[in-house]
Amino acid sequence: MTSIEEKFEESKKLGLQIVKESEEDRLMTLSVGPQHPGSGHFRFVIKVDGDYIVFCDPDPGYVHRGEEKMSEYRNIIQNIPHLERPVIHDSTNITYSYSLAVEELIGAQVPRRGQFIRAIASELNRQVYTLYWLAIYGIFLGHSTMFMWPTGDRELLIDLLEALTGARVTHAYNIPGGVRNDMPEGFKDRCLNQIRYLQKRFKEYEDIFYNNPLFRQRTEGVAILTKEDAIKLGVTGSVLRASNVPFDVRKAEPYDIYNEIDFKVQYMKTGDCFARSYVPLLDMQESCYILEQLLDKIPSSGEVRAKLQPNPKGPPGEAYRRVESGRGALGYYIVSDGTPKPYRVKISVGSFRNMLALPHLLIGKRLADMPAVYWSLNYWPVEADR
Amino acid sequence: MSANNGEELNEGAVSTSTKDSSSPTASGSIRQTPQQDHQPPKLSSSLDINNPTKASQPPTKGAAAAASTTGASTKPVAATPPAKKEPEPPPFEKGLVEGIKNKFGDAVKVLFIKPLRIKIQVDPQNMVGVASFLRDSIGFDHAESVAGTDYPKDNQIEVIYHLGSYSREDLAPHILWLTTRTNRDDARLPTLINVYKSVEYHERECYEMLGVYFEGHPRNERFLLPEDWADIPPLRRDFRIKGR
Image 1 (cartoon, each protein chain N blue to C red):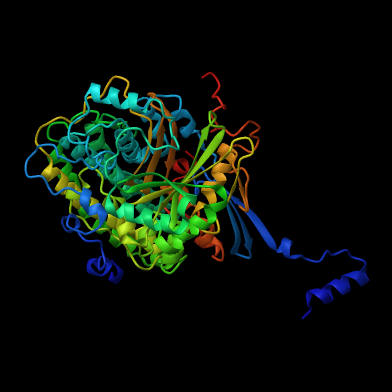
Image 2 (image 1 turned 60 degrees about the vertical axis):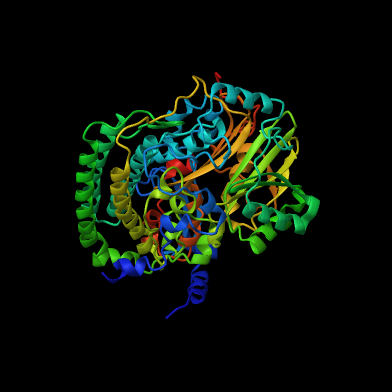
């Protein structure tokens, strides 16, 4: 009946002081994180108008540990254990590209059996990461079964990796020249058993989670990242492949023995939250197929690592090598000045690149979509901060 | 579920690796065919990138020492080509570089051409022009990383853009290193954010870690470091970690 102006006039007559609402007052600023369990060690500031997000500013850095600076003080072998810290759930892949870059600089040749074991460990570790991510994604969409199932299944893979590397999460297994030690007895059969179990489980994941009408309502058609925007923003990994760009480093630039492996790059065309959450599952299914081939083709005996000098160093030079990690392309740019310590190490990680898509996707969406959008980006705050 | 139909999803999936080995792209030339026996392959994919001639045998101590002595006179990233004899650059990469050279002539300095990796150096004032050409005419459509390296001996900071391509399939394995150098005392460079949107956070990181001010970048401000950081940019060489 009465507009704001009328109320204002009325209050003036009554001698009341009412301040007119300005555009700024309408917006509410929310700080999501860094203590918020839904964001990990990451903070982003959003402004909402009603429940529509109109502003988003990521503020990373709460777990910045200066990995790049630390690498300048240690020699190339000493660097391995701390370099895997940014993403301990995917620690084989983050040391994989480091090893590739160092091998290019020092001129080391990985024995064939070593290359296979590397690939096996990296595929297993990618699945460990993806299952962990899927568990968190599930619980933040209110699906607690999806938290428990992948967490439990991940444990089996961790046991496998423990048998292979000797450590549950932080393996430090990939080293320049190959892998630290050989596969244990009976690993192949054990691994094949787990793969068959997982393949069965993935179908159950689809039934309980991906086909769940509530999950579909919350993700289908939400926050669409078009192909053009995905390329422009330079996103990588499952975020890119969900937007109809079939790019995978294992296929685009095969490293070690990946050019002998037959697999397809899994991608989807819609680019919405559902595609971004479904592509990692497709990747895991493809990864099982890759593992079967690796275990089938691996040479039955042979060296697993090349002998290096005690304090390896190469001629001055630079190298940039990348691998496909659980979150996309993971590259290392290393400058060597001819001493055993690297002159400069730059880690180009998928999470840091995918962060650019967060404001792009969140602005204009409703606050309730925020967890689905954020977790669909496959973002790992510790990795982005390094 | 309809969207999960495997055939539909993989309709345009990338061809299998066996086909790749015969593909006409330059990347095909370094891919090896499946080995029949357990002998180590002649060309390892991890090595032939760098130095195909040396890759066939593991480097002996003598060879490594010889290599290090030949390179010892040059600086870590010398602007001059390495002293040792480089293998003939692959034709595809050579063609790319010739395309850039034809357009810009001496404004672009080619530092090296290796299989899948090209490094070119450009003066700061030409950066935007060269980057636009690389994006529009060649097809490098995104930046994977922006790395800065401090060279106190030259009193310079080198900034490297690692450019990749999603839209051109034959460029997918390639990374073009677009580099430029700026004075260390007054480090200023034009931003490439209007050419490559993907460099936004990378340049911001480079600003706080190396103190390179990107002119035209909307936010040259703190990103990863603590809010009360009051020291010199930490990735400069003269910043020392306490106790080291």
